[in-house]
Length: 543
Image (cartoon, rainbow, N blue to C red; front, side):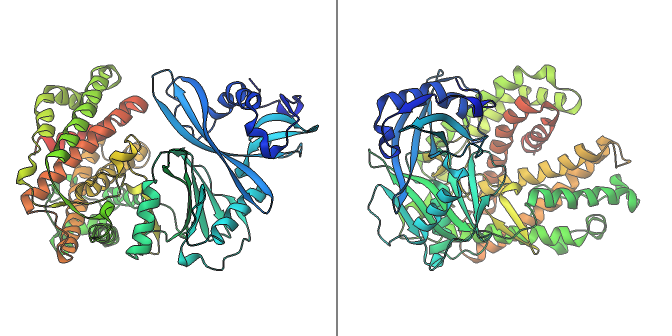
């Protein structure tokens, strides 16, 4: 294995008499590259998602040329096989460089090609590669039937390359900023199917002209040897922004909790409201407006409108079958119950093995969860589709405050890849739109509690128990206002969410599903935060 830190002094690990253009036809090279080198490189990458599993071996599932005017790079589709008997596919573009000082952190292999010494690196480090990809999209023909298919939107006419840079730290993908106006997202973990982010972006932008998401500008897709269409890259406009809605909410909520002391507010005297009750701003008592301020409620209202508009666009298609609304049926119910029972059992096992990590309210709520496990399981199984009259549509699928950008008191929705734990097929299943609403409600709940956790010892005089009381009151008004605005908007546009009782049932179901999903993450990575999903579960099972 190659030591990445001292690579500058390493002699070529492989010598080839073949030229770069035919290097991947050389079986000896491919064997050395995959087994001796790539494992050490790949497990260090941020975009590699197999860190919790044991890597067995890597195979080269497919390779293809990314080229223009005689300039050639290779795109590799790597099949990473794990000891636990599953595999994942990754996209890695490679280049050969001879400059000793270049890309020292992203070198994969020292190599000599036709007596010329150099390194194989991740091609994304090369400006010449980034430029080539931009130009291939900008000059794409309307119909591309080659193996690597470049596509451009009508919004991307007559564009020329000026500059490119990395966008910053991302987990699963690599994004490049071009001309400080466009973003090309390279999908690293890939699937034998069109990526939902590409499908949704193109549909919302080109077909529905939904303005509150980055406009679709182009894409790169690969048709593999089995005729699957694999999304490699997605080009979109760059939304100038002030950060995401998660950071925005944390700042606003810190002001709200600081107001308790600043305005000398008695938490016990604050008027409360029912959970999941639809509210307008006029319904919110003056004491709550005085405490929270009108600005935050107005922002919640705007976000509810944008969410409704996204769902209205997604639910108004009658030609493209991937996007036409569907009713509930037996197949959906079987799929949902199997998914939920598997996830529930998994979280149950984690809780039973994690009780020693919990204390205080979290421990009390975890014990309540275990005591009521049969009734929670029953809630997941009691999904009777015959009573539901609403529609299922394609949804965002992983909707939370971190997937929303803030700009000029407005919100822009990004990242339509779907739930990371789900298969690509499951991410495309039509779901109740209220599942996205539930995702956002859980995100509001998290933001409120995170504000308490991050600041209670330093900035707030009230006890943590009192702050939790204030948190629940605040959560009810924020979600009530959101729900009131959202339902009114969707009803006005004839998006069928079902009757009121049905909406509450689906919302609670999806909230419970989301909180149980979160619980596994928190118990595994930061048990002190497990109180947040546990409180969410308690809210639902006791109402």
